[in-house]
Length: 599
Image (cartoon, rainbow, N blue to C red; front, side):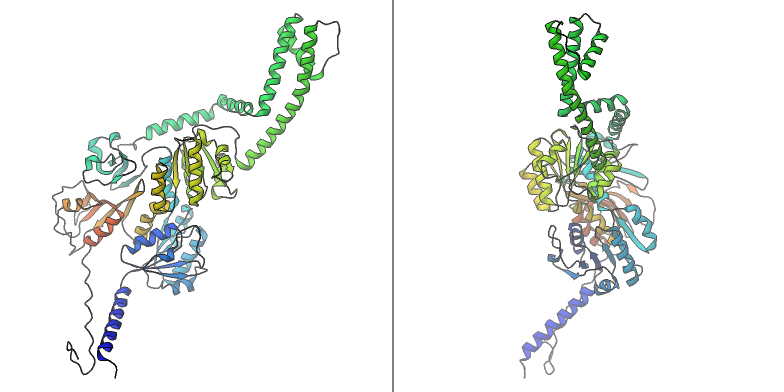
């Protein structure tokens, strides 16, 4: 007979495992399709909510991105296609939500249609670059959200390139709130302090003393801060573009900077000079002298030994100038035709630029950044090594100079006039290329403002400290909170990116029996990473902005908060009813042994 102690221990372990699986099955289940950095950040955000996550990934992982398979606590399903069979294998039936995170708009729509066949009414979150297409197909699904990480991140890159505060603004309950410098708004318009950015290397988010925050959330008073200055700059730029003299000057300077143009202008100068001397020597009028000089230069003249020596010298020089002028004119015409062909093919204007913004990488984010800078009236030079990149067509349509080449190479940056630009925005999908482009640009211009996109957050922090690159952004990090909130079907109002941090504006309902009931707002406000900016009392529709801090919370109240991502999870747990913990299973007994006896 087997050892009864060993038998009892084995039965206890089996029971605990069975109960653990039962508890695990009771948690909400979400499915994520994708393997890039945004999918990784989304999965980590979901795991912080204590939910079950299944990830569907291609059989081969990308070598240039993070490995989502290494995240502990997720179920990974390799699949070649996102079809009904794959979704059934992933347990989509009965799931609470599905996030389609691939960078393929049509593929995501097709996968969503397949998922709807498996689980009708499922909460869908689609990642799409063409949000117009996404909003057009939303009526096909019962519960669908369409988000674009490029659209979310582009304003942050644009503001960083222009050296401005992040242009975050949102409208809620009849008020428009903007992110601004405290010095740019009146004290009575400040809603709450957001960050102390006095030390760019150590930005303090939601400092305990709000008076120390120089970056604030304020009520808009007609126009966001800085709008008037930007509008004047745009008007001046457009006025210069429409001015014919400016166009003529651009053409002349563009011609004069080329070697052929300089040589041609030098020969013409010789002709004018000797034509003037010829007029003095033969007592001709200026018009007559110019006529004689041109005819002599172009067609030559019969020799006349009876002329004075000075006239003979001038005649010989003019004939030599004529011999040089004809080939130079021919070369200039050919060069102009070649440049015109290049302009048609690549949108390139081959003249030095100054005060422009260079955008390297014309993928989803780069295209949005280029578009928004153009809308603001900022001159842009675009760079991408792929002539068929997503933003190449947009650049040609907007008449933006497009350089086809490797943005990490010094000659490519030199062709983009990076030494005279006001900012460099590097947003390709390769961290090594981005970093090399930033360092090469800094070598050409030591004080250049660089906006660098890096997927690896730890690498970004180290690069920022080591190379004094003041600004680096992770698109996936900035966009992940909005995707997670949409998947969890939460009332997420806005995302405020600050440096490499992200603050969320959310509405949090207070449920019955929640631990927050009876507490004062001051207690919630004192929590790390939480600021209460509004309260909707239970049973009322009106929102109270900046409520009294001594007011106590009741069931049914709704808090409007500015909160850090990590603090939001803790706040939601305190605002929810307590979850009963499963009772530990009783230790099983073997027949013949009473419960609790040593056997």
